[in-house]
Length: 259
Ligand code: NAP
Image (cartoon, rainbow, N blue to C red; front, side, top):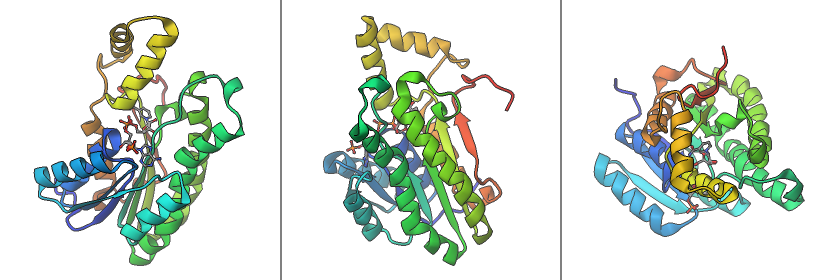
């Protein structure tokens, strides 16, 4: 299927590796022009060259922290009129809420709620004026099935989810859709770091923790980031114009519910 993305411009945040990078790969494969964002220049430069080489796509990059005003300004300066915005940032650390002070909560809110809200604020009216826009936010399956040790993530992402629920209904009549992707366990650096933290807490080998998690999923495996990237690209296509305001879980069916 041709997703009709040739020549569309896309900002993809937190995209030098992991899920953001997979979204950038899938959009580039469809002919979109990409602005890759992450905080560290070296891996960004490598990722941009690799994606451009693999897909013959135009891939630019900007080193920026989307959890800061300066970072958001740098992203918008580099690509003021995107057709597509993929919001993403590193996840907050797991832990016990008793250990998190106001500063810890502000860091989580800046990264996992306000980065997306402020990038939307800077770009969505332009999308509406041009009659086309796609906004995809990478959140977490924990929005549907919260885990106590991910309290910072649960709180910040629930805030973003609430904001998006209203926004999506406001902008859809201008050709702009807004959806959230809720990953479960995808095989990325972040997942490995979570397993290492759990293994240390429980005094077990990391491989044992990994294997138990893999087995516990109905599919018997972790998600491949390319699977999330492919859905992101589809949601950004004109064909997906009637999918709006949705929270789409990609977890192999781990969270059992009727809806
Ligand atoms: P990852 O493999 O660790 O990759 C994170 C990417 O984000 C890197 O490119 C990193 O580069 C960039 N980044 C981090 N903080 C940033 C910031 N403030 N501004 C700009 N770029 C930033 O992580 P991942 O597994 O892809 O996870 C992505 C998001 O999905 C996280 O919020 C995570 O909590 C969430 N999630 C992941 C899973 C999973 O199974 N993997 C499940 C549920 C939710 P720099 O460090 O150079 O900035």
